[in-house]
Image 1: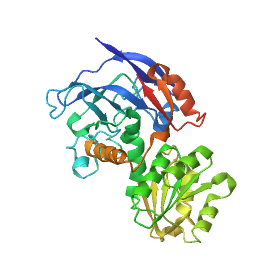
Image 2: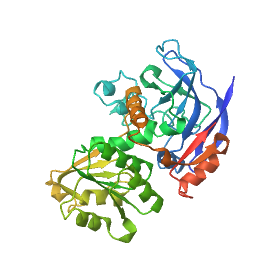
Image 3: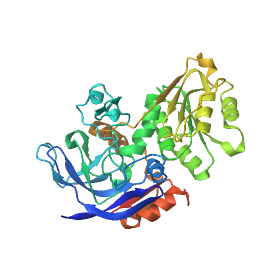
Length: 357
């Protein structure tokens, strides 16, 4: 049986490069030969054991590649065609999909439906940090790449761009809004770009890494706040003349950033949460206005499917957003363990790494 290289979860603290069989293709599937992929912050949660997955699973959920083989029931595509698939791969026919929430796709359990069911790659099925990946429900998930777009230009579309934009979309950003983004990692930076596209006229980015603050300004932040130079809540309330912000986007997943995002909201404002949390959250009474502040707290798992990917690639092709600056380091798949070490320890100003077989 033909074999391929893959980054495999062994146990908490260990993701290693090993070999496993190239997947067989079912009628509705497609086999993608990976040309570029990357490592996500969620993969670091998996590595640390903060998010549980099965031992032996191939990790990764951000694929750019070429169709190697098509299932017998998949129409409208050709082998050899350049494509991407979202980190979220909805079936298109589940209850969740038909309710308009494909990210929550998946089979039910005896206790109801499981959250995050649409996230399969590197979670419930083998993922993309490999030479090949099996794309389920290929007709709903493969999106052709337009000629002239490079792998690195669209590498953020499957997850980071989709997630960051979802923070602005779910938060209901409107023309003229004031928006703050807490934590300017790749998702937060994409949230800045998304808020700009949706019409926010004052965007505040909060971080402390100079390189990230600089990229945030390039992507649309009007003001950057260094949280090491003073309480960010006080700084933001001063910047807004005490009014607070219309939308606060939390893009890290900690109690501190969540609570700060809640405290800077104007009455009636929205906290749009994108972070992956590893511990229980607490909502302080004062920050919550005793439950009477007309505030909204909403969470988002990045939308997937081929139509979402088509729209995001159109944004890239239009030149309205240029995310190439997010790719700061490049590794071969053979060196992915070194890439994990760099990315997991956030050394050398890393934002995203491009992994190429």
